[in-house]
Image 1 (cartoon, rainbow, N blue to C red):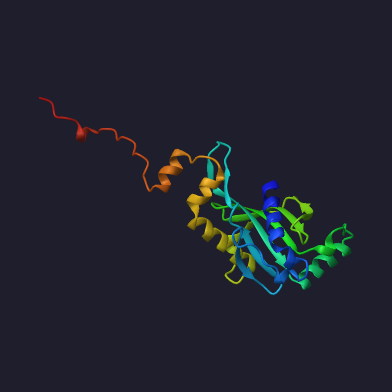
Image 2: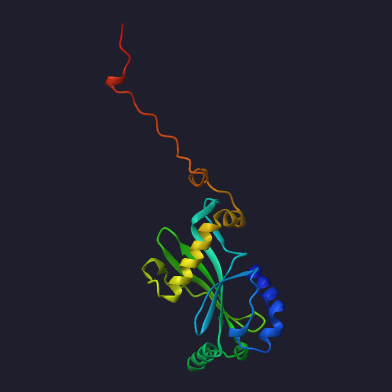
Length: 207
């Protein structure tokens, strides 16, 4: 999370004049760091295109099945009030929530299982500093079953489309090597076929 927060701090420096005087809905998020996907009446959805990458497997190789994605959502005033009201109702700490502007989340995609899991959720203030951090385990959700009209479904599919279009870039950012099998697969090479045993039909004729 340290590198993620450094980039958020950079974003905050670039956006301070806007964040300090206007609502989250009017904020300008740096396009060189964050990729905008969609906006609803309550939130704006982004993912961090400088940090999206694959995980590293237990074998030390790039895990092409697992995608790690830092995301950012900025809130309008109605959403901010809703979050604050719910925290008060639950009697949770309110320090810093007078400056709430949105949330950062880490998503983990399992591409084979077609599921996505939120592994961390941070509420953010107007300097993009985390007010609170939640790392409680949340059950993975099947993104494949979400409809085309589902807001989260559209967000997930946009992230996956970007990852597919920038696969080599993501692999390089992961900081590990591909396994030989994966490297061959990405090059379109087939693994060498196993030698076939000779049968009686293919034996050489004797003299």
